[in-house]
Length: 117
Image: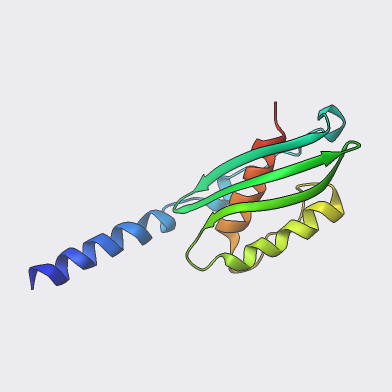
C-alpha cells in the first residue's frame, strides 16, 4: 500500500509544477536579426516541466533553420509545428499552438535565448 502512495506523490510532483506556471507572464522578446552574425546558435529554455534545447542557424540576417535537439514534454509534441511559422515570419511574434502553450512558449524562449547577446 505504501508503494501506491509513493508512486502517486512522485507522479503528482511531475505534474503539479506545470499547473503552477503562469504562461501568460512569460514574455518573448524578438531578437534584432540584423545584429546577429551568420552562424548556428544553441538556445535552451525551461517552462515548468518542459525543457527545450535547439540550434538556430542565421544566414544573411535571417533565420534559415531551427533544429530541435531535445524537447522534453508531456503532451506538447505538437508545439514543434511552430518552427516553420517562426522561420516564415522571421519573428517570434507567432501564435502558440493550441493545447501546447507551455511547449510553444518554451520553444519560442529557446530561440530568443539562442539569438540574444
